[in-house]
Image (cartoon, rainbow, N blue to C red; front, side, top):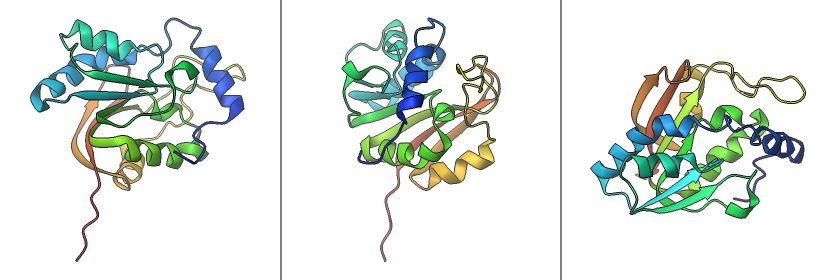
Length: 182
């Protein structure tokens, strides 16, 4: 958690976007999938990386999951503090918003805090929202073939599924890579 994951100018853009009540709602769609995974694995703690307005927590409660330790992190919400390690790290509709030159730093940070599993969703097309300078809010619009080598540098992919929840995207369940010696 040493390398910068967001520039000040982009942090300011994110704070502006988060003033829109319809920005950061994707986790509500994914919460039932995450809730099922929590039930299947006995997860006790969740780190919500890019938590926004903590809609994942609301979605999990609506799905009957309320007995977990929940650690939100979002640089646009300084009151959440720094990213925290957890059994399950969720990064829902976040990675496509990362500044391309900071993506490696973010993936490295995710790897550092993922104790057992990660649940990451990635939208691969344009967002409906734009930044104040006119750029699309999805700074990275790449297919799964572009994302997979970047993810597998840090994680083992346990499950990959395409989704059409908000257009063209994928979600993955990952585990931290364990380097084999021998």
